[in-house]
Length: 75
Image (cartoon, rainbow, N blue to C red):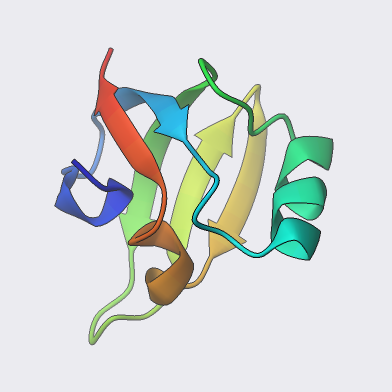
């Protein structure tokens, strides 16, 4: 499933980030996004707006179109 299918408050593990642009992959890696990392959805904005996530204690916002490309599984 992709990150957009996850409900607010659920914790998931990242399976695959390879569909993202290489530059964005490097930027997210700096925040701790890697295969096997745990994420929690804190907030979803209306009308396909940004998602606020918690990864390793940091709040990170990403665009809806990028969240669609991040493959996850429930933790």
